[in-house]
Image 1 (cartoon, rainbow, N blue to C red):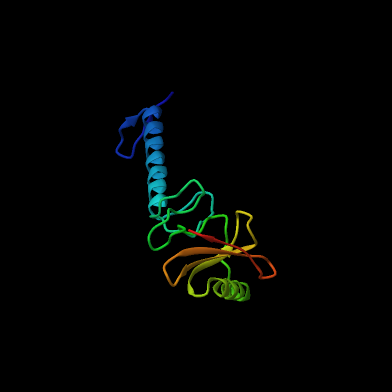
Image 2 (image 1 turned 90 degrees about the horizontal axis):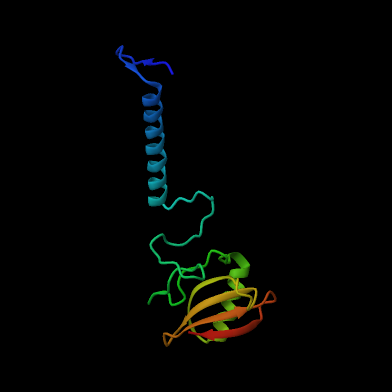
Length: 142
């Protein structure tokens, strides 16, 4: 192998040049990975829509807390919007009697097409399962 001349006239072996280039590339890749992890980025391009600070359970759902007894939304469930969300909220609240709807989403566990997470007026968390025809299928109390 021959030597390479640097800008100041010093000769460097190709091995030193190669090692320096590899080190620079490694630092760049490592810096990118750290920055990506810190910003919540994902190399797969998928987003879970959950907070980066929540602990994940085996069901791929952020851990429950006092404010969110069910945990956060699962990555395999989708938040409902528009008329579907309104109808699911309406029938779920009618079944619950009263309370606060925390969220409405698709149901990935197969109980029904949709689910509404509600905290009843007495503080009891419930999940109301609703089919595609907007009929209540079942209610689960936590």
